[in-house]
Amino acid sequence: MLFKSLCTAVSAYSIIPVPYYEWDKESSAYAICFLPVIGFVNAILFALWIFICRLTGLSAILFAAVASAVPVFVTGGIHMDGFMDTVDALASHQPKERKLEIMKDPNCGAFSVIYCVIYFLIMTGLFYELFKMPGEIVLYVCPAYVFSRILSAFCAINISHARKNGMLDAVTEHVKKVPCNIALIVLFIIIGTAVAVIDIPTGLAGIAAVIIWTIIYRRFAVKTFGGVTGDTAGFFLQMAEVIYIIAVLIGGKVF
Image 1 (cartoon, one colour):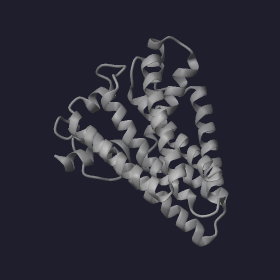
Image 2 (cartoon, one colour):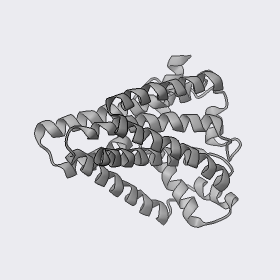
Image 3 (cartoon, helix red, strand yellow):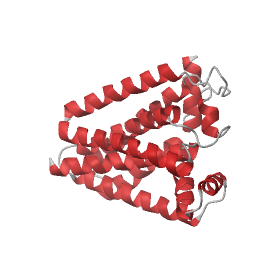
Image 4 (cartoon, helix red, strand yellow):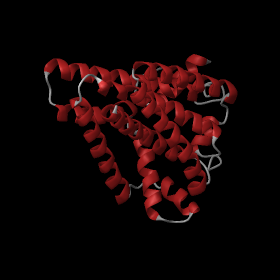
């Protein structure tokens, strides 16, 4: 069952080739617990790209540009798609029901493109600054990909859903809520402790930032959309990563 859940999560949220299983009651029972696995893949590739750039003397701007694109290469852009749909809905300033309709629209709105470009510009700038800083503080970006997925999965399980019979509802319908919550919390504590021990100020800055963002997101999603959706989950994940990285940059410069 666990192997099926792992393959189901990896095939749904990344382009990594794994055996295919139908998304049924058995395979989805623990699938959402394995979402952080894709974060670990992102982190490994990001660290490898740092090593290659340091070894070959590649420029900081090239490092930053490719580093910004790495998660999209791994996920196929599924979370960025949710981010773009969500900002499109928010930019409409329409009532809740209309916002949900806009998010379901397969057409790409102008605001989604604008904010997507802004997002990648910000990420590129952040990576550029971190890469130039003394030491290897840029490696502190790695946990962002894991934390964002742990918290995204946690929110998907525990916050009410805006749409009944929507994609997120189908994904979490048969989830084993208690063991999945325990697994996600334990993983967050383990990774968080390791990060904080290595560098307390910088690590705690990043951890505190994503926890605060999670609290804000819960209130925002319920108030704005009536709950979470698959698209807002992608929005949460993308924002969690950029917020964590900003906090790490500030923590590294201040402390």
